[in-house]
Amino acid sequence: MANSKNEAASLREILSYEPSGELVVSMYLLVDGLRVTKTDYLTTLNSMIASSREELESNPNLEKAQKKKLLNVVEDIKKYVNDNFRPYSTKTLLVYASDSGLWKVLRLPVIMKSKIIIDPKPHTQSIRTILQNYKRYGILLLDREKAQIYSMYFGEIREYLAAFISDVPPKVNLRRQAVLREKKLLSRMEEKLHHFFKLVNDKTLELFRGGKFDYLILAGKKEILSNFANYMHSYLQPIRIGSIEAEPDSSKSLIQEKAQKIIDKFETEYKNDLVDKLFDEHNPNRLGVVGIEAVIGALLIEQIKTLIYDRQFIKEGYICSGCHYLTIRDKTSCPYCGGKLVFYNDIVDEVVEDALSQGCEIVDIGENERLRKAGNIGAVLRYKL
Image (cartoon, rainbow, N blue to C red; front, side):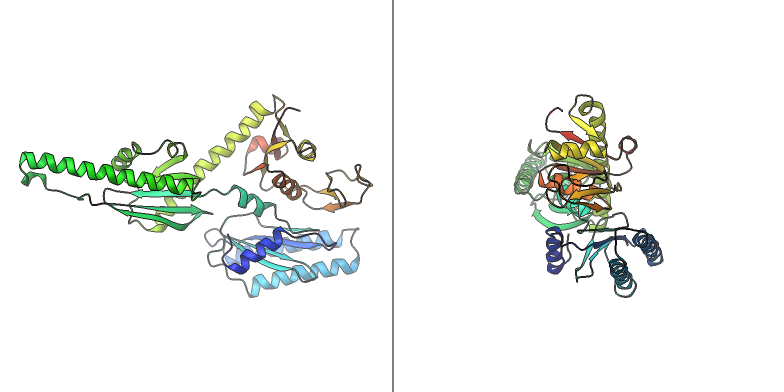
């Protein structure tokens, strides 16, 4: 994810951040050049800053000096984006900053919603979900002469995994061969092609078992792929999610564009199917819950197997500074340990982090009407309520 060792170190620091009592400004800004211009994202930033300023100034729980410090931090972010930031291949810019000197900048190659969250710790829900959920896709490009395997994740071809060259003749003028020689030649060609396909299959399986990719896309001409499919190992067949028309010599940009369409379709269908199962099977059979309060209740007793939420869902709430009890209700103190409840602008971030720490599968959904009507969040449980 990170573009350099420095960014990787920054990411680790943000993910391991411990609250110190001060508030942290987390800014997400969509800067993808294919979708927005600089004018567009600066306008969005200014609008978010204006909203944050209004919220800070009207917040009765913050002292005047604290408000001023946070406003200065927000202005520092604005200045950085205006004067120093250049998008290049970045799709979403993240800045984490505080008055005590915290300043971390991350460039992500994925599309995320623009927002500013001011809470006692960095807002990391989206990053953690990406790190856990983003799958690696292997792309196997094949013809009779050669094969190549790429790894694609975060929307880009990231790794060149393997290449093969076959000694099968690409074209043979059979009209000039005697009948017997023609048959022998065809037999040798088919035998060589058989060994070539077997070699490619074995290496692809080895890469899969080695964790180089989670799903597989085949690329080539239909007749070649149809023939090769007969050689695919039984472990590879279930992870094949589609095929594209492309050659081993095709440009990376073309391969990436075509593969992304297959990936988008696969991921959308998988997630929507999971939401349907939540409502049609799990919830009626008491193996599922929907709505933020029900999800928090299941989370507090470590009952969640899969957490499903709308990636744009934000909900205010409170967290106990002592035992980390979560609630969306304003209570005088924690009902478990009597500790102080700290206000958070987005408690969903903490729900996701707690679910991750419990080993839950995290699924972020975009624009699913059934989930939206049910409160934007739900969970498949480990056992019945």
